[in-house]
Length: 218
Image (cartoon, rainbow, N blue to C red; front, side, top):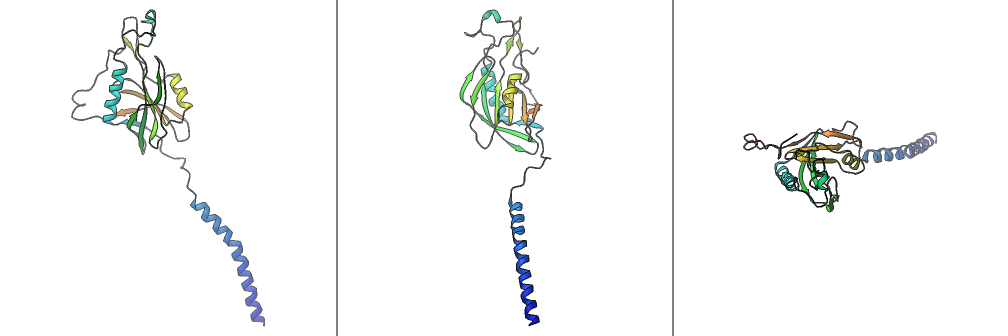
């Protein structure tokens, strides 16, 4: 009888221990199955790299948008010519790309929906696809009193304000052939500006004849 009672007591203790440990085991398993958050040491983007074919097409868009920069536009007062007024309109495109370690590769672009171009601003909507990374726009040249081009060589205050309020990863501005500047949204939400923007160089062409500015630089 004593042995039988001891066995029953051990069984009760084992069942109580099982009831105590089982929920703990389930909770630990559920926590381990949750996706781990990005570590705080995630690599920041250090460079934006534009592929050769994308660079060529961006240059064509830029050259087209600035081809008549010395001509008067109907909506520009000729009296302001020589006072730094824009002589052409900005152009916007949506960017697609991929991230590899600390580099963001620009792989393609497409025209935005509902683009509205002005002398010193441009608006449009980009589709929210998996490889969408942001947008780029051209900066129109202005003329000085000698009709030489004045080039805006960085994102303007308005450009940066619009970028902060958007969900884009990057924002680029182009002011000449192969001349691009950019801003990047870091993994913690802060903005990095200016960001280095580089283009792939073709050893057989670019090393022999580097493209110069499209107009005299001041």
